[in-house]
Image (cartoon, rainbow, N blue to C red):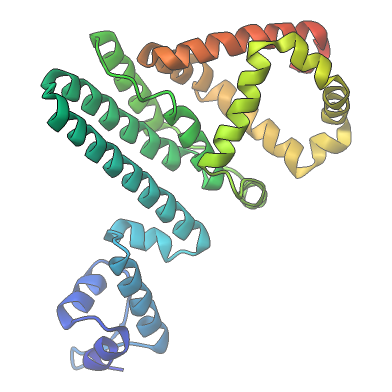
Length: 285
């Protein structure tokens, strides 16, 4: 079909179709007379482009979303994050209108912008629903005001780290992670965090209450069957990333300097983990 028919089928204007062709979102055949010939597949792709534009996605995200469900899921998570940040800005604006506290507004706005920057990069580094979990997890510790130059330096270190790393998994492990991480939304993160907080508050009581389950899990984790399973291979890949990419030596220390709330959480978690390892010496391998 020619341009006018492709426009009719897709609901797009000629100018819009020409733009998306120039961006490489569709690649119609160029005829000898200079006209473009659009296939049925091209027209269907243009309809998807039109739908995604109406949903508010920019061209770069449309390109990723057209690659399939994984791209669509990533776009949806970024869209949800943007909506969350917009609501936070509206709340901050209402507070400013009520209090007239410009200095406080500037501090909280800087923290909000840093939070959005870090969460967006976490979504880009960590794939699929797991990236959403990681982004939500760290985001809950990035709500405090930025008050020192040390925090700004730490923020720069976090961003620099996230800009130069990526977690690239074999396709079969990526598929496994996507399936396993389905449902890693805000409610799930809060539920997991509540369980961790409970353990940190009284690790002795937690280990006593869950001793049998922990023993069974550690026995399974140390088996060859688990190491060869998708879950075991994925765990090994995540450990390799943490050990080699600077996650533990660069990212975590910078996060602790950036966020006092995260420092308090991480220090308490390390203390609880020490008690855990004393109870289960073989668990650290």
